[in-house]
Length: 377
Image (cartoon, rainbow, N blue to C red; front, side, top):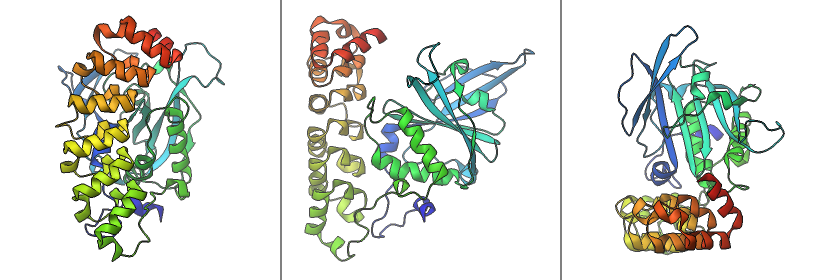
C-alpha cells in the first residue's frame, strides 16, 4: 500500500528505507509560522513580520527556520489530513496573458478543511516548506517563503481551489517527499526540473497517491536475504545501480570501498552515504569528480575544501551556488565554473561578476545565460 512508505524504518530489515539526511540538510528548507504578541529583532533563524488590517489592527507573525536532518517533526500536525489545495502563480511580468508559461508556481495545502495551511514550492534547487499554525489565514501564508524574504501577495494569482478526497496525512506527504521526490530530485533545469513540474507532480500525488510514479522504488527488494549478506554481491549491485546504497544493510553502508564504488558510478549517490563517508576526502573527491552536483552532499566539514570545489565546478559549473563566497571570488574557480556552465555567472561574487574575461567565457559557453545574468544584475 502507498501509505506504508511513511512507516518508521526497522533497523536490520532487508531493503530498509534510510531517511536521507544529506538531502534534507542541503536541499530542503522548512519554516514554521506562529502568531506572537509583538515583534522583535530577528536572527538567522527567526524573523518577524507585521500585518496591518483595514481598521489598523496589527498582527505579528514569527517565522522560525527549522534545523533538518530528515522530515521535520511537526508533532500532532503529522496526523492532519490534506483536504484541499490551491495552486498559486506569480507572473514574471505585471501584465501578461494568463496562457503564458512565464510564471513561478507554488502550492498552498489546506489541512483539516483550512484549520491550517502548508506552502510547498520548488525554488531553483531547493524545496521550501512553510507550515502555519492554526488561525494563520491563507492570505498571510502566500506572503512567506521558507528562506526568509517574503513575496508580494498582490502579485499572486490563485488557480481554482481543488478538494482532496484521498485522505492523505501530513505524515504521508513527508514520507512521499522522503521517498520518490528525493529519489527523482534533479538539479534545477529551466525545461526539465522546475517549479511548475514540481507543482504538477504534487497535485498528481494528492489526487492519486496509488499511482506507481509516487512509490519509492527499492531496487533490491526482491534480492534473496542471504545474497545481501555477501560483500562481493553487494559491491556488484551498487556498481550496477548506485542508488542501492540507500537500501543495503547498515554494515555495508559503513564499508568505505562499497561507498567509493557507488559514488564513482554516480556521484549523487553520496547523499545515501553515512556521515563518516561524506566527510572522507577520497570518497568526496570520487563523487564530485563523477558528478559535480554531489558537492552539496559532501559533509560540511570538508565541503568548502578548494580542491573539492574546483573539481566540482569543472564537472558542473552550476554548483558554484553551493560554494562559499571565498570561492565565488576566486578567479580560477569562477572561470572553471562559467566555462562549464554559463548560468554559473549569476553566482559569481564581487568584481568578477563584471570582469570582461569572466563575461566572455560565460557568453561563449551560453549566450542566453550571459544575457539573463546581466539583466538580473
